[in-house]
Structures are given as C-alpha cells and as structure tokens.
Image (cartoon, rainbow, N blue to C red; front, top):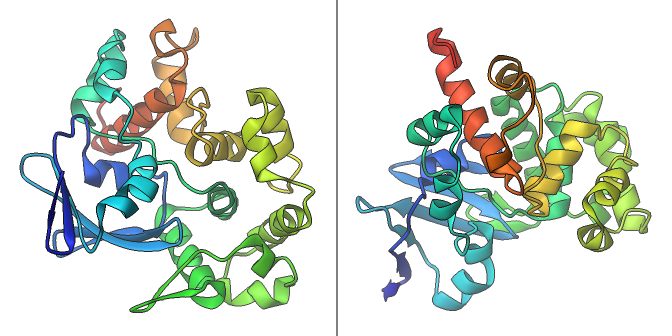
Length: 276
C-alpha cells in the first residue's frame, strides 16, 4: 500500500474483480465512467479503479480513511482464496472460474434495508434510478452533485405524497414503515446485529414488505452474515437445475458467498441459452 499524491494504491489483492463486485446486484449506487467506478457508500463519495495487476487505486483517499471505511466495506481482510478453494462442487467450480473476483460488500444496514425494499419486483436500472432520486431529494449533499443516502430520521416524518416524485409505487409505503420503525426505535439495527441469525431475520421481517428474500439480503449485505442465502428467480433456477436435493456441504458457513457466485453465473450464462 502506498500513497501517491492524493491517491492511495492498494496492491497484493487476490480474488477481487472490482467490476464484478460492484455490478452483481448487491449495491445500487455505483457506476462505471471513463475507466473508473464512482459511487457513494458510508456517507462518502469515492472514485476508484482497478490496475492491470489487480490492485486498486482509491482517488483522494488517505490511509486512515481506507482503514476506517473502505477496508471493511470491500471485505479486504477475508481470505476469499481459501474459501473458494474449498468449494469442491463441480457447478460451483464453474461459477468461480467464470465469475471470479466477487466479494461481499459490507454496507450500512439502514441503507441496505431501504434499498432492498425498493428493489422488490423491480429491475436493477429502475432500482438505481429510484434510489438516485431518493438521495438527491432527501440526502445530504456531498459536493459535485453527489448526495448521501438519507437517514431513517429524515424520512420518518414524511408521507407517501412526499415520496411521489421518487416513482417508487407501492414500495414507498414499505420505505416509510421501515424508516419509522428504525427512527422510533421499534427496530434497533444495532441490536439486530447482535442477535442470533434466526432472531435477526425475524426482527427484520416485522417491517412491512420484508419477506424472506429481502431479510436474507439485508443480513448478508448489511450485517455480513455469510450464512444468509437470498433466493430470487435466478437462484431458484439454480436450485431447481443444480441442487434439487439441497446445497452442497462445502459451502456451509459461507452460503452467501456461494450464492453471489451462483447468481452471477446464472445471470450471465442464462441469456445465451446455455444450461447451467
């Protein structure tokens, strides 16, 4: 790791593909422009790119900020090479070979909950557009036309009419219910973080619109519970075609990592008419 002017260069990274990690459906505030990825996370704007040797260049970032924010966000202290090497299932090996380098982002729980409520029965471009409007309308400005994700406290006093410009449809009611529960203390996300897995899932499902898939997404991407295994249409296809008798034992404890590889593999393979 070395500082070059205002940029921080982080090398010696294995099993990390920046594009696959940021464009695999787990986060919605990143876009690629001019060879770099730009986005907002943890209340900070960031521009970064991947070097030819697999390193990362964090623009306008110092070591203290990297250690405090981005090391955890990109899950850089986990040994993915060791985890993936243990996946001795043939289908998983194919997924890892084709979609290598995905890491599970550790996002803020509130933003993750709100984002996946807005993702219900929605496609990724539209989710990104709704979240973009939400942040531009109610988020704190970070400069250069970039906005932080609005807090639950900012959204809780609003009504559905105030959210109409977002064009979120019925999902606006879910977002408001979540904001009111979090802001009012009925859903303490810090307390959820400390709960056993099943209890944490049950607590999240007290929010209107949070079913099994959304709860599992929040547990995986917002709380880092790697045993979570969100199931959408792609994963249901995977289960039907590859694992009708259940998931392989080799992924136990890291089901969420395996899920992301299988999801990306199915999503990228299926449009070509190729069997999984």
